[in-house]
Image 1 (cartoon, one colour):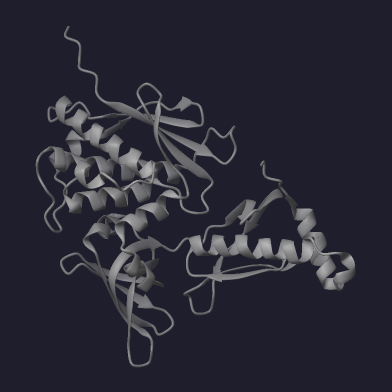
Image 2 (cartoon, rainbow, N blue to C red; image 1 turned 60 degrees about the horizontal axis):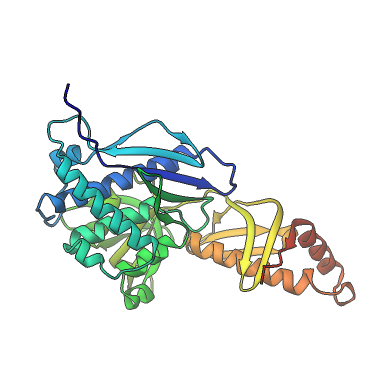
Length: 356
């Protein structure tokens, strides 16, 4: 019986906040696998010698040819081996190997936070931008309690994605002047028009419809199942009353995430604080439905922000300020409420001395 050729393979290693973590939430695993599959399909279009025309979808044949096949997880963080290509007659070992080579090189560049050479690896700008959007989907958000490493079939790590990966990709995809002009608007999703590349949301402060013109590279995000409330990032045009009337140059669309923040460590400048127990903070929306809000009366936390990333940065900054101004102050300089805040901070956190 002839020996079947070995398909290219690699493994996802998902590491939790603690070294002994060997489990992963299903939502995280699905997020990683779906976006990795999307990246392989897009790279597959490239190695087949084709391009992606505006609003054209990846063909079913290409999706099947470059399908990721999950194998049994193995111990060690959470390791999910995958092979490229199923049992279909469409499978081509040569194309699969070429696709994996490109995938690996792109992932290595992103992991190293280097844009040099990306255009030569994937010359088609439309494919390259959509692959990078898929990398964003594989990567942890700012407050995530996990990171992802990719290992080859020899168990050698060739890329690691952590909370710094998404900001790097966004900087690569969006020019600085466009980022500086962008705002984040939260609204209720009403409709999607793929022909006009437009989504319509209900802007809750005015209850008016707001048309959002998105860029081609983020279109894949709209094929995901969207919830009612979404956050749209782009350049906001105002009406005569100063209220948003349209969003253009949309660069990001995501579901509004109101899951709890799990705070174990605070880092700000040279200060590092370690929580005695995980501090759980539940965000809500303020009255305008545009800002996330977190409060904790005992610890003096009172923070507003447009996004989870901005909220996490504000939380770190505010807790660092409270620590320096109250926890480190002599009792005689504090009134009774301030001393109670100091005691609460000292009970919750301890300062970590960084190694020289």
